[in-house]
Length: 300
Length: 283
Image 1 (cartoon, rainbow over the protein chains, first blue to last red):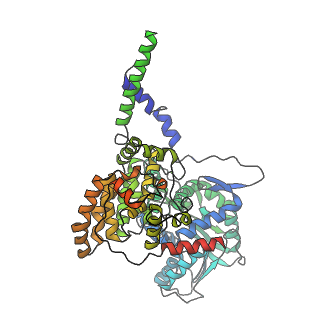
Image 2 (image 1 turned 45 degrees about the vertical axis):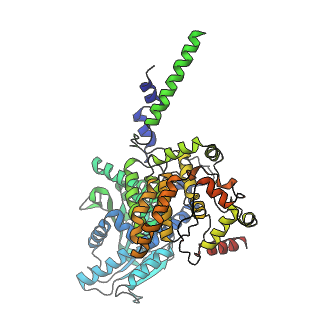
Image 3 (image 1 turned 120 degrees about the horizontal axis):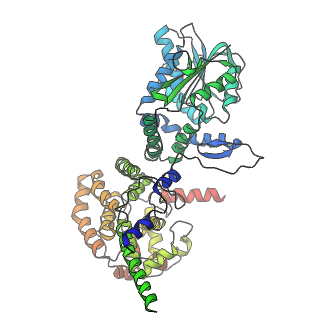
């Protein structure tokens, strides 16, 4: 018996193609769930519905202080372009001053852009934004950010509310614009969020959601996949000493429904969207090939 | 009978050759393209690209903020390479080292009984250790667990190295300021051969002012390299069995002599904070 063949056999316990499939990091774990407790996904883990909110809260408590730094590092600053595109698509202030609700708006990126856009393009200083977030640490960071701008202390222009997107303690038919950027995938029940959004918007009001989505192009998808699962958790370890939160982040992106399905969920909540296709007149608009995508709907 | 012995001899020689080949195909020849499954609690498997990325990233992070213990730990694990299997061989060759690998003792405040050690007589290693901890204001609890080593036994060797670092401080009578840490890194590199010790030694002194740096290279480095190189490999020392041993005798046995007089400053606040936290949690 030649030693080399024995060594090869010892080293590779099963054929290489099977090994690849078994070790693919994108395969979600399976869990046995009892019929009694309702479960939901937390990244690739399956957790009881009641605990997802706490788990997400813990994640954002720990990432809050370095949130903006990490966003810049992970997306090489591209998230700024996405948010700029998002706000310019909505054109806040075009038809006069409006009341906006920015949900999961924690650090205030969208709120600031809305106010700046209305001011710079339409000389509109009456448009107001209410920033709502479930996490007080993120709101603190947002408040600090606004202290560096001229909008600080203008309570009727920008205010910060701690609340739950699934159960908004706000009066119905109040807002002209409801935005939620990179927040809806962290919510336990997306249909509840959409229902609440429908309730608090005035008739004719716009619902707009910017979120990570599915990439169709296979080459881009492979690069994106490898980047997400290799580099991002490591960036979290190096920059923020927190691998787990960023692992959750990339897993939660994979769990979010694809563009068309999410468009249908928006329609199910009672909104009118564009057609079931991408682009001008469609229900969604892809950014960077589907890495992020903007869904809009109007309450009739 | 002869057929059986032939088969037995053939299979034994095949096994011997297989072991040699397996040993040669060890760490250096690994090409981990796909991530493996975790093999112990806290294990984070990395493929070769992620390993390299983390090595570079943790090197930059450690240099810009040397207080990031987790980054120095990550640097050590990602750059360990063939040094850890070599350390394991060294441990296997010594009787005491084999006992350590079998028992796998851990060093933290639940396994080290501080009361018991401070009750030992003056001049014993245990007493000297507790005195050193108090004098520097540190506790045995501050070591990051191992995440990035794939083999569980090598992960234990790395963990043991990290946890015994304070014992090396004590036996060499060095405090915890920057120049003493660097001197100890030179010592560890000469004694154990881990790349992270060399990296810390080579780049760490850039943070010192010129007076301390010249003192480091003039007095401490020659001591560290000579003493570390000639002393017994400290990874094989079962420190927990030697609490009652006389310090002078221990030093002679290991082949260590004292460094030039180091600069001892005020104790750090770590031990006080840890004691306060313990008091709070017990109340």
